[in-house]
Amino acid sequence: MTATRRIAHIAIVVRDYDEAIAYYTGVLGFELVEDEARGPGKRWVLVALPGGGGTSLLLAKAANPEQTSRVGNQTGGRVFLFLHTDNFQRDHQAMLAHGVRFVEPPREEVYGTVAVFEDLYGNRWDLIERRAQTPA
Image 1: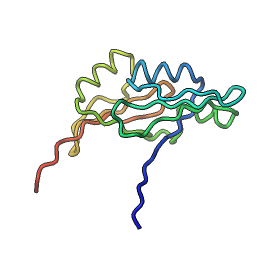
Image 2: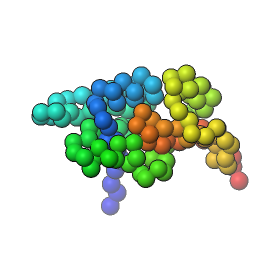
Image 3: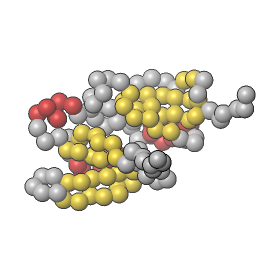
């Protein structure tokens, strides 16, 4: 049996819908895909990268103290998301110009160029330009 499956959304717990939308669209270059009211104080907010293959981020506002404690630290300090680019230098410079905090300088790895940055809340991301695969 063959099934077609993909990850559609990844939830990120945020403090505030509007500040998260502003950051992900204005700083990281995502597009607002959906923003729909879902009852008192709740919204369904999706952002995605143009040409991102269909996976989007669900910006989920923290609704209780436990969720609030996870804002910015959803993975215990590990890198959470991996942002691939076709031009590391372009995107790295643009992100620096928008005040994105990189926690380490860019480095060359076997798989490509990478640097870890933190989003608005402190979640860690890798910005990666994959090295072209060479035939064996």
